[in-house]
Image (cartoon, rainbow, N blue to C red; front, top):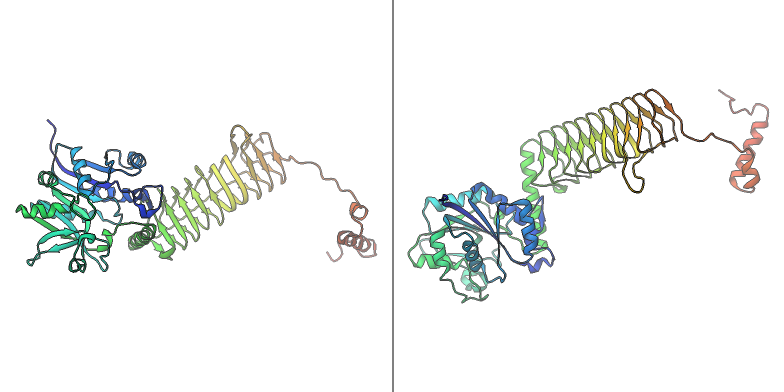
Length: 487
């Protein structure tokens, strides 16, 4: 026989979120590296629940697909008709008939909820042996939120939705955060007694508290230390507000660990990012996904890094990188674009107006400016001339170029892959390299220069260029008019 499940988490994620005015389900809107739903699941993770059930409805297929990515062990349960939170929880519990102990219910749109608050709620609930405990918060403006109604002894009397509240109840500022802990057996019994006698005609989960209290069961309130973490999201304006609040929380956390953020208001760091001590983040910087920034590195200003590793002491200035790796003490930018699988070794450089893709650039090697390096390997301590293009695509397939170590390639080169340039080799400026260059060789692949004397005077007579040429010719023919005069 399997062991009893002591804790079950139920996340309510079936709502349409009409005010979001989006084809994307509300709980899937992103917020600094996770969806709203993803943040809630992360907050519940420290509970070590035996089961996690996510009630889906609007956009169910999209939500299921997202769960497969972020929480594959979670069980999605379809609520085809949204008949209230009580109905949703009843359906969730029907999917886990063997659940015992504590069930934690969380709305799917509270992304600022801290894990320590969820743990504190559950521990308080279990220590008090309560039948039900609600997370409450004292807020400056309770408009639109359910209110906590207490009796004269300060004990929970019931929870009332704003649309069903009296004027006196609406004046209360202690609100229901939409997060609960229940004894699962007593919850199942109470759910069977819910009615739809309310303004919405729905089964309210909050009515369970009054039912339990009337039956003499102990119910409790646990007050969150910070009301901000209980804020939900109903439209894109509120979503933007939550994003700003989370940005401030994340930035403050990193600064307290020893990271310098020069302008916290324009620096956005996903919750999935790692930044090490003494890193400096300049203004207008965005760090997204699985990005990591090493100790003492400089990132920004005006830089976006997605799933990118920046090594210790490296610098990335006014650049964009996706799926790249910048080695220790390497430098990138300004105005560089590192595409996926770009890897810079220690002290390598990718400079101004350079784009790389699937390129490995060796230790101390430089691609200083105005170049494209794709499908390439560059050895150590080589220099790639300005305006170089690695011609990697033949219209059907991509091909690879290899540049050896200590090589020097000229400006305005094209390397037509597949091609290999050996160690210590040189290529002349303006060359189109279509064949391998042996180690230590100089490759020259350009036409011989030919000057057509007098062409401008004959073909462009009457122009400023022709007049300049005429005067230059007269000056050269005068005594002492040699170009080398004064050397």
